[in-house]
Length: 334
Image (cartoon, rainbow, N blue to C red; front, side):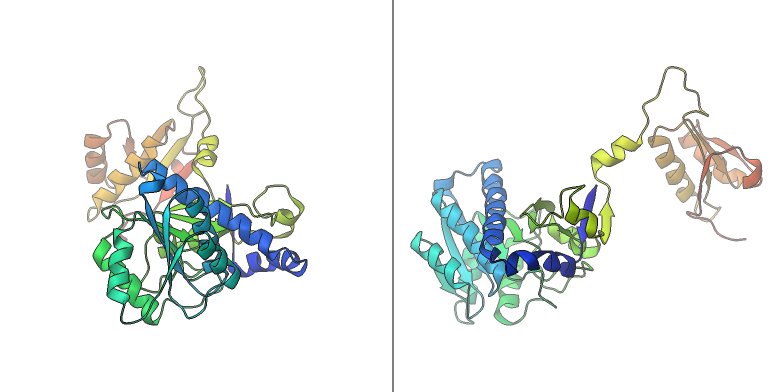
């Protein structure tokens, strides 16, 4: 199960480490996790390090520093990395190390914006490190225009050749609600630090994030059973594939339809018979013992042409022998 927290919860968990002077340690752990995902994506796509180019979009805060430190690690592997500073200031220590390692800087302005957008699209991989969890609202000014230009040139995710990795969360995604403030550069993967944020699991944020990677930087929020994880209640939980699989009981030799479960479905109508067909079909796909449909005879006849194993009848729910009920899809009150 994936536990997710609000931005405020994660920032509060960081405070004791920052007060103890361990801020750089947290940042280096985050950067290393970002580097591993980015480098892994290059390799998985068949790109050799010395023939790959990476563009890092760098904002003014710690998010930009994480991205720069990850870029420095890519430089050590032989990848050509260029940083586009989209704000006037960047993290001084991160930018100095990036430059010493041979990284190149470009400072975004209205004059070079079209050229930088074209260069970003020609890159093998792009790291979005503009806005972090503390940002409110979307991109503005030249940064917004740059991302809009990249989107227009690169095309939509899944069809574009450019790989995109978001640092902590895609810029323009609300950390808590997942609401999008356009423009947003949809990521192929998002590398988030300390714990999953709620905005990456819901609404547009879940779509924009792509594959979600949670990097444990030592806050104790990702390890089940730890004192800190127990002390901070997750704002949201999401079942993962293995959690859902564990909920299914394996059929046994002596099983019959009642031991494997009978689901009643009261759904559909003469106006929306397809809803009942879909509902009963989905129920059958779960592997339960029997599906009992309760509804108009004409709808039941349609169901039986598609799913002959469904037991269709009319009457009242309390008279139908079922252990659980699905009620409502496509039902219209007479």
